[in-house]
Length: 493
Image (cartoon, rainbow, N blue to C red; front, side, top):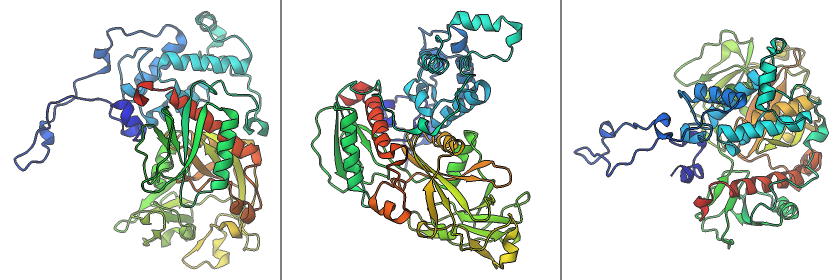
């Protein structure tokens, strides 16, 4: 049941406990009597007769984090993270703890692919060995360091990672060598093409996947009612940058876009220690407390996207306004957000990722024919009245490649907080005065597949060229197809 639900629901919706009952208790009117449902009595500690305690300091450190984050008294090194109640948000908390306390950069995929302490420890040892070009951490090495009074700052997880080579843009290029995952088994990859999809780039993507891994059978299916495609009897992975409207009946794993509200995005980012501009909700029946905000704030819809309604407003003039977006209809709430001053003209960065790995990065600057902004409170001199839009549409902006490693790394780290969403366009702002980076929003509905001729003609850049973006998308998809095809084989039989 857990494996079945993982293919159909976000991880945070997977129940931590299951109770088998013969029938549902009903009230006299035939409705489910929730008060009579039995309370789950199962606890992880009670089910592990063959529990294996941590066997070295690395596993001990991981076990302490698991117990703290999952609220457990003890864990076995072979316990499955999600079987103990873990989900995407708790995985994000674990990543944040490893990053803050151990200085280690992992992805949510690392946890999902290595869901036990034993496997995650092996993954960490492999990463640290590869980065430091030294043998993997061993229990004896850990003991030696901990017995040295001069090494109090040393920790068992970050050992071997202190000497990091500064990142360069070549780090983001499509890998040249084959992945160890390629050819692991024969499997299917179905690419879903939506109404506004780009068949040409999908066909190129399919050819690249076949070039990387001929054991993957790739087909393109239009996302229409009653779609039908003949597939070999193999594990199948369904992928779409956008939301799949017509869900497949064929068993398999699905990864597609999903509409998140901006407040949901900010909550997930905050849990991952990613900076976002300060924000509060604005409802029709309630004005928020804006103390601590600047003289000017940003007001925008919480649901859906509508650039014309992302507006700068004087703080004392903030009022409710009904906003209707094409993607989500009327937005039940608005957001009031801190205004981040990015320079004389608005500048933002789009870091586009697939399964947490960057495909391309663009710098988008506003039309320089517009009046300049000489500071965060310069709107008074422009006579804006009640509000003014600061979002430039694509045709009114200048788009160019961005190779700023700090911005790209920041966008990648933000994307990894959303383990259930395959393709993200992370909008990053860089504060002009301090250089601090913020995530303005995360676009998760698939409007980031910008490999079409139309996008190239409008913007004058071809994301398929930067970092070999389309080939890299195929490489990442081929890896993910093989990775998922080898998980829970019994669910595909």
